[in-house]
Image (cartoon, rainbow, N blue to C red; front, side, top):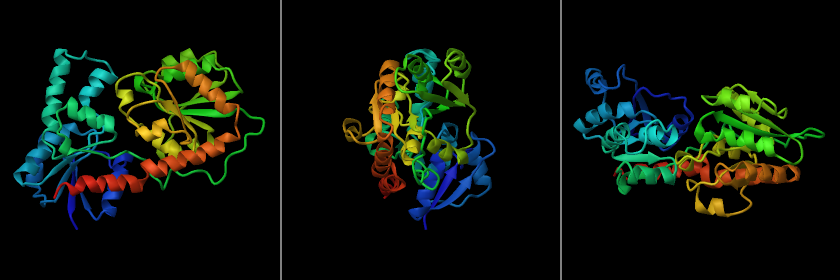
Length: 351
């Protein structure tokens, strides 16, 4: 049984990590965790602890800080290194949070540092094809080292309800959950609720983040819009199943066009109709085809979002069929079986 050493100060319970660790075990890998006290000196700590030589070192998502030490240790032992970044620090700084202009000294320093880090990995995973393209074109990762492995959702938790809920005489519920950051486009949701003209809807926004207070204030006079605190992860599937229509992301940032957020996979897995922004991150055949359980709207377009929801609300009986289509989309494109196949293909390149 080959051993993979998971390296760094990572959260093993984060959904991306939970899924790939489960699939690694199913593929016959033994997982050993190494949580160093200090990221920068982790290779020295690993030497002192005399960690056994594995067949692969894995640096999981968000752990750019652990990559340098992990690569030094792996290179000294001629062990391949896999990095699953999920995000780019440069992308986040420049295109998501817009804290440094593209081409500025701060941006270029971050870009150079991250390029140097990504160059250390033998395999770099990307969660979407657009992230893979960004890693290649912007961060200089060669195509041969790039592999797309979608995030997906934990199927043991995220399953359709046994039977659709009945809302006789009650407004349908449209549910958003996530972080209140520009990528999510929560301002578009509030604007859509304001200009909405259609059968009654209850708009619920769950989560927290830097834009929450502003959104609350913007929706203060909208009686059909309510906010709820974040839901603990184990309770999230049941909360999704209570809603009638799920909302994805609507932000117009470059970053928003590169991601397929967790909520999309989770909504589809629960068999819920989904409305989200069109993005090149999705497979072409999924975006261009009807009957997939997803309604696509342009980024940042509140009027079109409101119109799409009005059309869905006018035909509530059709939501159950859309839900079945949504689950079929999940099974066909983003199931654990599909992700396992992608992951196995990436690992085969190790030789």
